[in-house]
Length: 184
Ligand SMILES: CC(C)(COP(=O)(O)OP(=O)(O)OC[C@H]1O[C@@H](n2cnc3c(N)ncnc32)[C@H](O)[C@@H]1OP(=O)(O)O)[C@@H](O)C(=O)NCCC(=O)NCCS
Image (cartoon, rainbow, N blue to C red; front, side, top):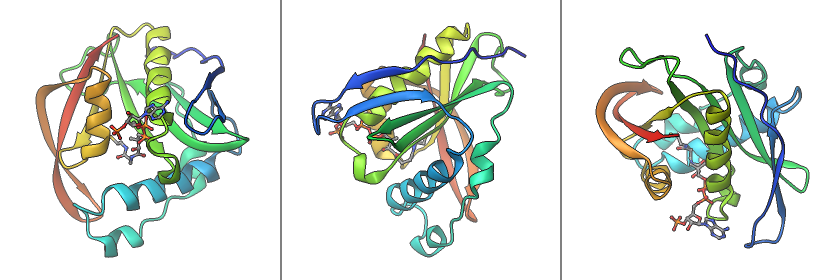
């Protein structure tokens, strides 16, 4: 297994609200903010293909996000001291992947109130930079077929479907996930 190197902090001025965006590695104590972002983003983004009644029951303990694996990097995007988005990158565990060559964008969520400001775009770039710094040559990600907004963002950033599909069950609902790929 390859250890992903620590990702350095970057500051990117965003034009929409003139608030600076800071991307940094997650640190102890960020778990509660990440849990809140996960739940709010999931409820807002997936209501058209997952029953809102089940999404309403969605819970995410902060500890889940505090436990970073040794072979993954969690990046958070912060505006005015508030964590507004986060991403996790790691090696790919797909059966057809070369774990030394292929990294994965495993997790990618932003607070719905910040969608459309470019936060996702900047964090996505930082996530790929972290994988590149870890020596990976390409990256993949899985997303639900009906997850239109992220799919649009991935495609605008140059990710392409590679033809792989799988069935996923989440909150008791089965749906198709598609795999995207990009060269690093
Ligand atoms: C995926 C996700 C993190 C992306 O974050 P986001 O905030 O929506 O991403 P961005 O702000 O970069 O959105 C891009 C949009 O902002 C616009 N934008 C980008 N940079 C901008 C800037 N500097 N100023 C103004 N607008 C900008 C883009 O043109 C794009 O517009 P569009 O919505 O018309 O395509 C977010 O949508 C999310 O949390 N989704 C739910 C969870 C999920 O499904 N995650 C993916 C799992 S695979």
